[in-house]
Length: 167
Image (cartoon, rainbow, N blue to C red; front, side, top):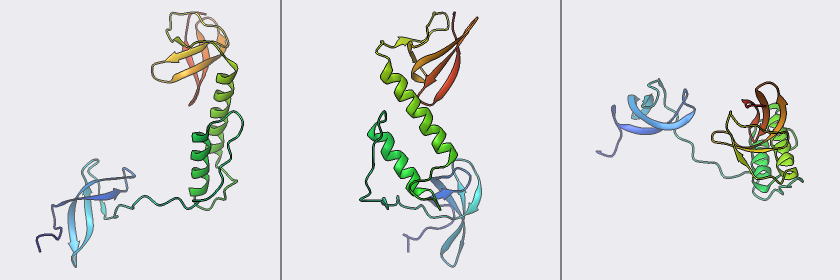
């Protein structure tokens, strides 16, 4: 009987506050079943939710079309998000997913149009519209607009950012 978990033992469970599978400590048992646990990450005490194994892709043999200006990885992730959304069909995406996809496609188009080498970002440098900029946090982006006297708008993979420059 040493193999049965008891109060104070550590187990893996889904945390309702963290929205992730984390380490938990058993707080209460009823009839040999775990009913309450405490999350080791955030400290919340809640009902026990067993960790769910990663579901196998329901759309095993679905065709994933790659649109012009996008890459396969992006198309696969978009198709998975669309098929896994509850109550949605494959052709409908949420507004947020559409916005993210549009930003990604605009970034891809901008990157495909520019052949310039990426310059490291510095707020003390001068840039022109169309310059490719390498930012340490946001990655590679393309200057979309200069806003004198000291700002520029750059399209990065995760959206537009307003950064300082010497115009």
